[in-house]
Image (cartoon, rainbow, N blue to C red):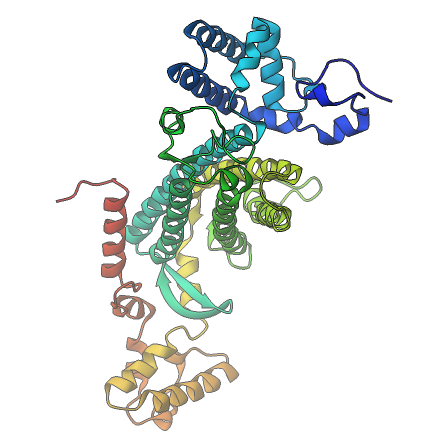
Length: 469
């Protein structure tokens, strides 16, 4: 079965129509129509340049420009017919332009190939997506810093974990600022990626450049790029800009997934550290008591698809020779999907976190359990001149005594403490509180309130939330 509905714009060499199944397999218009704005912007810049270098007449430029703007208006109004037999966004738009203004539309493709056309469209989209995700990541970072300041002012103490076992007490504000630090790097990765992909491949033509006297620098500037790509093979055949974007997406997704995991755990009955807002949770169809953390679970789960998009494109490009190959048609859906996924996840988290209710009594109680001040006891001995390794062993023995009898360190008797080391007694053990443990960790980047306040203030300044002195 064949399709002869419309002659292909590239069909001069072919004696037979494209098989309908091949047409279905080959077409990308179902997803790349999303690039119509970028495609028409690229065409408008290209045709303007063709007029400037006298390849086209002013009248031809005006006809094509008016026609492209009319097609754009048609698409924006939802009145455009996207046709599978026209394969992709580029051929759909060019064919519609031809239908509208006649054969002069064919002059638009002078000194241009679909190879550099798709490359410039996709770079424009990916650059814009990177900058948008950078802005959304920055916004969520601002929320994190605001929540850190709120928790700092409330003095909320949280158990800090290693190996998911109680380790040392920390401020909840310190916990928030840890994620703010991750998001700062995520924002930087998107900005770095956008800067590196800020090159226009338009004018590379199919792979070797063009004999026409075009001005690639003018087109690059018109499209908002910093410069044109320096090598035509690389311009049409490379997709590392998309890989870098997907890599930044994957790392951000990993950070959001870690945050999601902690929120899921902390909101359980067993932990009871926080209550998630009704607006961002769901119920059970059978168990009326349930309040399910669906937003966090989905954010955690969707990290897998974002990782998969990166691995998928890496697998596509690893075996493709220079320059363009049809394999590269597989570059777009993963980028679109990762961008869409993270856009909603970032917005959801920015909205949800300020609505969470943290239970300071529960977090403080949990921070005091699990011998979280054991290191403080060892540090006390070390400050009295006891070698730290010896102090570590002494306190480890005390923890063993306490755990076997179901007590905390401050519940041990004077005799038990002095038996472990003459410098220890019940007064010393009772004085080493969770609050003092937190306050004492004043090394740069530590959890002491004074250090966390410095970190919050620095972050607010960096985010432009306060003016510099």
